[in-house]
Each structure stands twice: as C-alpha cells, then as structure tokens.
Length: 50
Image (tube, rainbow, N blue to C red; front, side, top):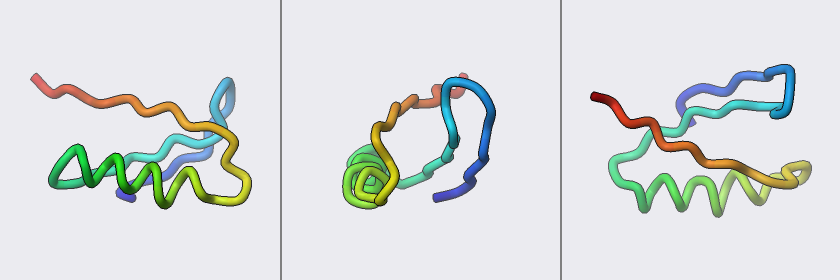
C-alpha cells in the first residue's frame, strides 16, 4: 500500500495501492485488504491519468 487516510463521510478509510499490473492490484485487494478482520466491504476506483 502506498498511502492510507482516515476520512469522514460515507467511507472510513481511503487507501492508495500501486502495483506494476492490474493483477497485482487485484491480488492486494483480494488477499490482503478484504481479509482484514474489520473490513466489511471495499470499493475499488481506478485512477486514469491523462
């Protein structure tokens, strides 16, 4: 994980994940973030840079 922020509002935490491939991003979210004890759901948003 690159950065993590606690936020107010609809979401509790925003985490910035960087990887060489989308497959590695998927693995990080699926096997590490979603398996944390108190994580009930995740929403993945991909940043597109112009």
